[in-house]
Length: 91
Image (cartoon, rainbow, N blue to C red):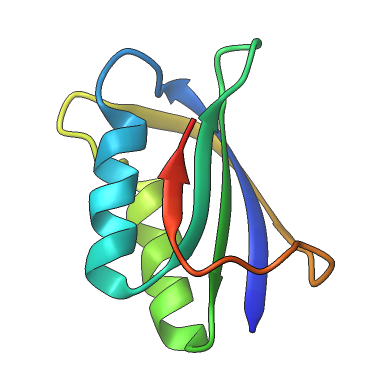
């Protein structure tokens, strides 16, 4: 399982960013979560057996899956210690 931790900054809260990220994840079979952070960013945990689909997910998150969202900065960290899940949730 390939696992990443993403932090997206920009216009990512209050614009449907987490909901759109879940729709994208579900369409690609990506598991994990999207959660608003107190600093205005969104933390995303994403995992997949298929590295290509995970890369596609990451690239689309960089461009903002939300029509009114905007990602100004983006941090990506591979983290194999993330606990596996078999669904995508928003908190």
